[in-house]
Amino acid sequence: MARTSSSSPSSRTSPAASSPSAPGFWRSPLRGPWLTSVLGVVLLVGIPVLFVTGLLSYAAYNPGLSPVNDKTPDKGILGFYLFAWPTDPPWLYRLNQGVHVTLGITLVPVLLAKLWSVVPRLFQLPPARSLAHALERLSLLLLVGGALFEFVTGVLNIQLDYLFPGSFYPLHFYGAWVFFAALVAHVVLRAPTAVRNLRRMREQGDEGGGEREGEEPQAPPVSSAEPSLVSPDPAEPTVSRRGALGLVGGGSLLLFATTAGQNFDGPLRATALLAPHGGAEPGSGPGGFQINKTAASRGISTAETSEEAWRLVVTGPGGTVRLSRAQLLQLPLYSAALPIACVEGWSTSDQWWRGVRLRDLAALVGYEDEGHDADTAPDVLVESLQRSGAFRRAALRANQVHDARSLLALDVNGEPLTPDHGYPARVIVPAAPGVLNTKWVSRMTFGEL
Image 1 (tube, helix red, strand yellow):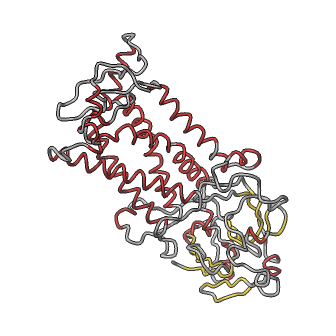
Image 2 (cartoon, one colour; image 1 turned 90 degrees about the vertical axis):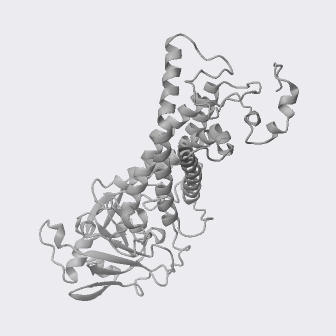
Image 3 (tube, rainbow, N blue to C red; image 1 turned 180 degrees about the vertical axis):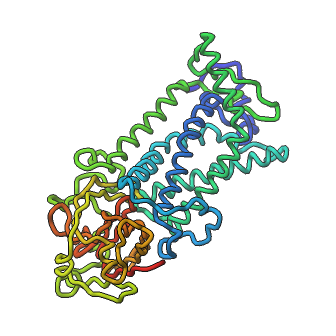
């Protein structure tokens, strides 16, 4: 809506104002240091949490264990923090990935609003006025590009839409390091200004000078060489800055409410409208809980999983044994209540699994379980009947094999596994990502990997 002001009409139609690099081109009265600083503080709190939980999610795959698990073989020093992923608490990966994905989705409106608030600075001319300014512009370019790349690839992965070239794992891993390095550089350069803006706003509030509709709170003077985000010829305001923040916050709350439910069973899952694993549970009965890949989608036929055809091949230094499902059921069986959690952020509550302990299978092929000494347990390479997929083969560390709750599961919730849950047998390990809990297991090779 137009407004009457002292600005001449020609100032709005001049050639200079038609260029994105001209201050008069960006006329929103909402832009300014206060709005930008508030959005920046929210991201400054949320993004480090995303970064840390993302690195932990990568560590949970045990990429240092075997080339089978390592999707970023050229990471070099970027893998300095990797460690043997623990099995306690058993819900560790579920919590980590739930926070990572849900927080990432929730911050999307904040990120978009932040980028909108600073877009005039992307068109500043000249591109660099000094070395310090050039470094700031470079950090801003990497920051904006990295943020968009990380959030877009993350959202596409959550939605199971792999439209980007290459594997999600290395793209997201390397992109995260580029983005976070740019963020650190940008924070170092811009944090003093953001703190001054927020302090000034608080002081104005203490003095009783509230914000009037459409009026930018006064900020500390900036260098004459640094263009202001405040338009010299603002348009008529249609919403206050607090109203704009309310809109952004409402969008974040809406995304949270339509995403977080995928971490729960029952009615709450039906609220996850934006998540592929939201909605009703897939079927009913003991096997009526969420899955990722079905047997049909992986080409698993009933003929090859029948009692007559299927055999588990277990190999170790003591030789090789072949076991039918009936023979496995004759071995000592144990139960464990464990969740399933996937990289896309969805998870289930504890399910009751029953099967043969992995360490007992290792003992069948030459590895004796010596008390509670996890150092005597071997690693294991697990292979599935499925013919393709990045994780048709997965490796588990010795501490995972040794844990008494790590099972080659045959039953779940008191009934035999369904085909979609991995019949005839699947691996279930506490705190491990879902893709390492291999379904339709055909071969297990124990030894140092």
